[in-house]
Amino acid sequence: MAAAARTTPTKIAKTKAPQCDWTEARPAPTVLISGVEEFLAGRAGQRIRDQLKGENAELEVHDIDAASYSAGELFTLASPSLFAEPRLIRVSGVEKSSDAFIEDAKRYVLDPAEDTTLVLRHVNGMRGKALLDLVRGSAPGAIEVVCPEIKKESDRLTFAQQEFRRLGAQATPGAVRMLVAAYASGSVGELAGACVQLVSDVGRSLTETEVGRATEGRVEASGFKLADAAIAGRRSDALVLLRQALLTGLSPIPMLAALNMKLRGMARVYGARGSAGQLAKEFGMAPWMVQNAVRDAQAWREEDLARAIDLACETEWLLKGGTRDPEYALEQLVSFVALRGRTSG
View 1 (cartoon, rainbow, N blue to C red):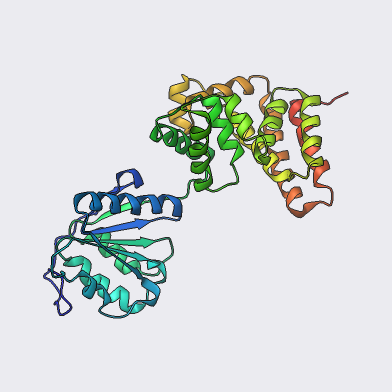
View 2 (tube, helix red, strand yellow; view 1 turned 135 degrees about the vertical axis):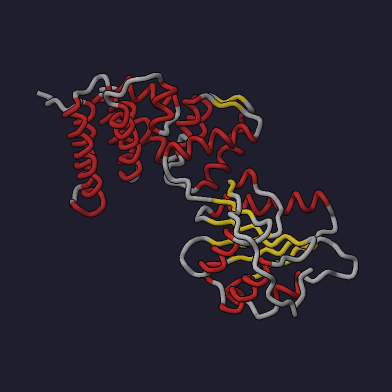
């Protein structure tokens, strides 16, 4: 049992704390929630609290700010109460820990209190590394919940698919792709909220029609339509979509991002052999994304696709301050892609 006057315990055999993602977060003597994705970290913490509350409604919950921590506070909170209720101690800002917290926590995790779950939230950085190493290597019963940033398109697609399954809904691959494109520059929390709102407003069966209607006002949705038209070789349609978007004040950056996403997908699968399932596993893409990329790439010569990738990189630089006319730069790229590297004349 934890106590303020505890002594350093005998040396414990070194074991590696198991890692899991937020969907597998569970109570343990010490839980380290690491990584920069705050939305998932919040979900992991809530999941642990809900499980403990479900086991005992009298759960005591205490919150500590590691940056303003005072010596001995952790041991005081971990000490059993009169009625011996289980305790959940949540520590935020471990990456900004005071020296006092690091020293107390290093002692505590090696000899945790009974009926107590200590949750440490560490975003990133080297502060508190000795404590993290201890949790990961020697702390009895400790686990680590890893919450890395969900940034890649493939990861966001997987996340959206998981969200719909969690909500008991089904969405077509095209609908999921359209939704992710519509929230390409938004946070994971915004994407999750959009999934909830769609299911609430539309129901548990979603197609591109419903998603397109719901995301009509999003900048990235316009970029998605523009990219589809350009990749399909519909130059006039693509340029009209571009001008309409710019006239309504939309930023060129998300439109370029949507076009880049398709170009990179084509480049990854160009010349590859195998089934959609095999290629999906190899490239970390969804099977339907592989199918679309392979189909689109068939209309291109390798050297022209390489030039398109180079031009897209140059255009990104131009859009971020390299030119006084970013709209013209994006128009040139859209034309190049729609013509698949060939001249219009």
